[in-house]
Length: 110
Image 1 (spheres, one colour):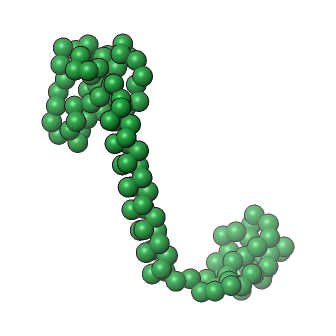
Image 2 (image 1 turned 135 degrees about the vertical axis):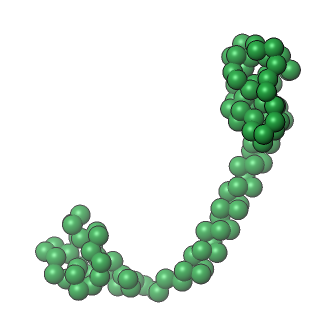
């Protein structure tokens, strides 16, 4: 839009400079520079990829030390690794504490 409409809450969704100028209490603020959509999309993609790597690294680190585990498949219960005690872990579907489950086993696969 080349800028934005500033003022009261009624100014927020105004679509352009002309409409903004007709709204009481609103004024049009010119953008400092034009929007580069390609650069914005590339930056968003890079941030998303970095975030995904960080989440995976944190997940892998927690899973490596957790006593409560899932079955290791893509479809495992993702919350098992957050359970700190054996009794709770053993009664959660898809979780096991050092291979022990309150259900006598668990369904695996995906």
